[in-house]
Length: 183
Image (cartoon, rainbow, N blue to C red; front, side):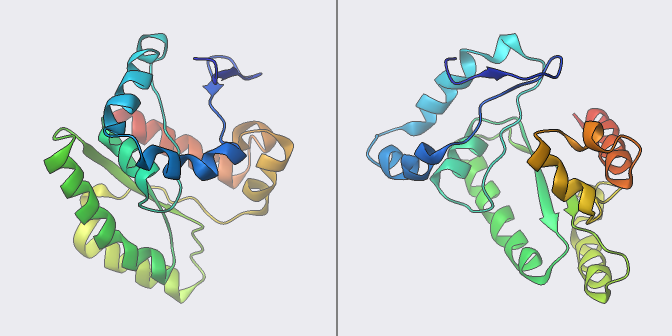
């Protein structure tokens, strides 16, 4: 609970990453069962919040596996790029293993396309390929690549405050509404 920081935004708290997180995987590797540790950490605060979102690194390291092991569902953000598409089958295999070993109720809530640019041929190819295999999992609205979305973290603001009527804000609002329907 000591790591939780209240923000200037009503009903939003965060546990920010810091430089100590870089060595966390090495430290956790020595513990016998880190899944129990992660469950205990969430159990101690879950009644204080309606939703807890765990933002994981774009890798399948121990921290990500442990986060998935204690989660109800996963939203998969996916850049509209070739290598992201290649990693999708590996991620789905990992989720299948996590269901078998640790968390049989883990659900794939959806796949969120990010850095979307309709003018690029590659974007169209990636979307077409995803629709072949995961059409029911794709969020209806992708998140476009915009300068304002890139700027927002530098100001310490979510995009809905940084550029409230911009394309990125409207897209994230649509995704939030769809997410609420899915969970």
